[in-house]
Length: 181
Image (cartoon, rainbow, N blue to C red):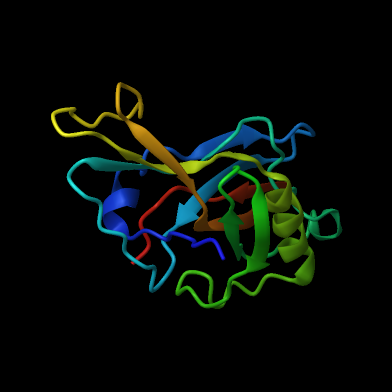
């Protein structure tokens, strides 16, 4: 059975500027997606000659849409968290709703919001995560290239947080790449 790596704060602190933003095609609202560090995530200690390259979502895949049946209603913000397993080929091999992370508890999102987030996330594709190992005397860099450098593609578990809201008659789905404690 393949192992799934989950990483804790040191790896994600480097990612805080990587939020994805996209305007929906119908002009209804701004859509952002972001990553949450899973509570109790395993920690993989990298060797001095190793670096980890996080899975990175490929461009062009649809963000969740605000559920039509709730447009125009004066609703509070709804939080939906989705756990993804991204396999070593970069495909989403599983997606499920996460209601255990502190930020995810009490989001009070009706099923239509959860379905929108799941439907979208299941279609995403990623550049696969990898562990790059460098031979003695070669300085690790973010390219994972060079003579004697080896790369192992690895599956990872990620949690994305989606914030569905409305303001001034316009809907939006927000989430940002943040450190949640």
